[in-house]
Each structure stands twice: as C-alpha cells, then as structure tokens.
Image 1 (cartoon, one colour):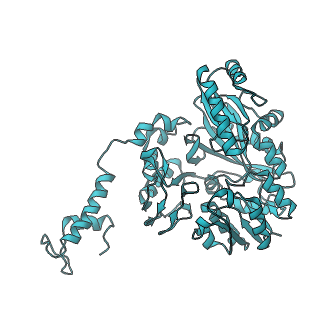
Image 2 (spheres, rainbow, N blue to C red):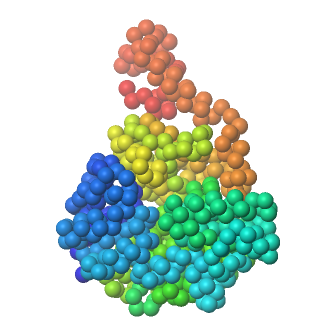
Image 3 (cartoon, rainbow, N blue to C red):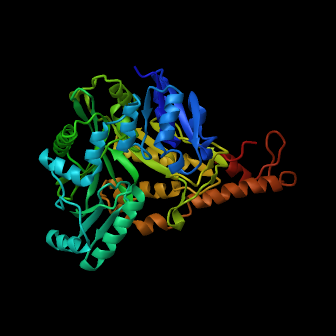
Length: 504
C-alpha cells in the first residue's frame, strides 16, 4: 500500500501531483534544487529534500540523488511527472532494484516505445497504421537522400529517441538533406545522448491528435478519448482542446480502438498517450507514444471527470481499473492554454524575472494549474512555462468565449508572458471555426505577432494608467467635481474606478 510518494519533479506538475496525493491521504515528498528553495512545490509538500545545484543534470536529472532522497524519507513510490526522468527506463529500473514503486510503465515498455524505430515495428505488427518511412536507422546522408527520393518530398527527419520537437527537420528538396541530417543528429546527440535518426513521409496539412490511454497490471486497457493539439510553434504545443473539432464520431471510435491495440502491444500499465497524425482526408497514422502523463492531461480530466493522477497511483498500487470503456463519455468542451514567461516579440525568448503582481482568473469552469506567486522569481535554469489555464463549458463556442474572458483577467507583471499572444489565437477566425491544422501558427504568424491595432485593450490600459497618475497628481487641486465624501474626483479617476484599478 502506497502511503508516501516522492515527486521527482518541480513546477506546476509537482504541485498538481501533490494535490491528488493530499486528497487520497498520501504524504508527499518534494525534491528541490538550490534554485527552487522557495518554489511552491517545496512549500506545499509534507516533506522536502535538497538534491543539488540549480543545473538539472546535478539535481532533477540525477537518478542516484533522487533514489537516495526517496530512501531517506521512506517513500513507498516515486511519481516522475513529465519531462526530466519521466521516460527514463534506467530510472524506472533503479526504482525497481530499490523496491520503490515507479508510478509509470515498466522500463521494458519505455524502451520499446521510446525508440521510435522499434515503436514503428511494433505498431505495424499490431495493425496500427504508420506513416511510410524507414524501418532501420539511417547510416549516412547519402542513404537519407536515396530514401527521400523513394518516398518523395516533403519528408520529416526524426531523432529515434526524440521528443518535444527536438531532432526533427522538415526537408522539402534534395539540397536540404545533408544539412538536415547533420544538424538533426547533432541536436539529438546533445539532447538525448543518441544520434540515431530515421525518415518518415511528411503528412501535409496534418492534425496532431492524441488519445489518452490507461492500463493496469492485469491486462486491462481503455482509451479516454482524444485531444486536439495542432496549435503548435516549432513542434511545441501552445493550445489544446477536447473534443477535437476535426474528427468525426466514427473516426474517434476507430482511432480509439487502434490506441488500445497499440498500448496492449507493449503491455502498457499506467497513464500514457498515443499520438496520431491525421491528414486532411481523415486518414490517420501512428506518430509516437508518450509513456508518461501529458502536459495537457487536464482537458481530458475536465471533459471526463476523471483524476488521471489518482488513477496512476491506483494502478501503481496494483489495483484493477475501476473505469470501464463504456463509462467513458465526453461531456462539454475544454481548452487549455500554456502560460509561459517568454517575450513573443523577441522570438519567444524565455523571460525570467520576479513576479511583481499576479491576478489569476476564476469563475465557473475555470482551472489554473500553476506554481507561481507574487514575489517569486522565475529561474533561468528550467522550462519557462508558468502554468496552464484550462476552461470548460457546455459547448466549444462557450469554451472559447470563456477562455477569452479569463485571458483578459490573467494579469502578471514583472516579466513578459505570452498571454496577449494567446488572446490573439482565441480571436483568430480559423481557430474559432475549428478550421486549423499544425500549420496554423505559421499561416497566421503576422496576424498573431503584429495584430492590427483597434485601439481597444491598449487604449484602455493607457487610460487606466493615466487615471491613476491623474488622481495622484490632482488629488488636492482638481475641481472638476466632488465625491460624496468631499474628495475631488475627475473623469479620468471615474474611468479608473469603473475599470477596477482604483480602490480608494
């Protein structure tokens, strides 16, 4: 029986896991680097353990330090979250050697699906459609060029051990092959310690659709429907929604069945994701499997009413799935926006700094998975994601309207964020109509980056600042009017009061 869990992660996912632990009456242990001494996950946990300097490789990626912390604090299990060691088979194996439960699939499953070439072979054997491409690692640039000609351009060059968009290169013509081959190998080696690459036919105008799956140690596997993840920048997801506005009920059923077949092919246990590419004719192909909890898992939780972290813990406790496939019914619509500390006007460069003011939105159907607070300094050492903003509503239209509202309510000062950029996505007619694919950001780059100034929000912001300054400077001498309590009042101050800026 699991009574204490060490969360081998940081940021919003660490807090999110700990919240489910607390609801289940399970104690949580936080690990932290020198840079995270004041982080929320450290403050929230029942116990905390310093594991090293700021650099990830000396703290959150150091397997032995984490194992040692788990033993010192007598943790029964380790939850890896996402990123860091979450898909590291060696870490899962070390946990097993130390009789610590790893909340995730077996090391053998990770190895089978982590190697994308191996995964393709397994999917073909399981009857899951795959994108045409190589079955073996590429040996050199000359072989890559020959296969490109056979498959036909465009093609996608991919790192076999890749993820997060790293080690990927889109090739349109022969002249690009050699440079793409060399740079993809180099990036893959530096990111994953492996320079193996392979080729796939590039699916034009694709949708990135993923299916959440859940399996136990008793051979049971179910699918928990899909997420539309096609709003991407450089292969990194920005906005996700569920259900997908693109796929049909028939396609959903077919893809769900293939997702279950894919998971059963590797004896999958725990929460995971089967990712597909779906072309404009609604033909779908296996892309990859993520053997962990996804960043975007909250939208699945919102439309299904399922706590995926709790399900992970129950499976790790060797319980059978208590959810049946026939119980899975999507209700309403959910959208997630990733809130990042980044400068959208400077190539989306990370924007670390101290949060001076923070106002998080709330209301019906609003969820904020975050870890920051006023006065907290976003460190330079880790991913710049501040948190995730999730909304739920009865229809997609209402969900978009709700997301617009909460993005306007979300206020962060002291550093730059992508909130305004996300607002513009919500206002895009193609997004509103659900007529978009993975090229959405590229196609609308100008509109999203440099919108036509309508005088709305910017004008209001300037007016609010002016209202406050005017009030301070003219408090005693302004004679344009008098408030009920005898204080002077101007029209600028009146405007400020209406906008909720002045509380005096």
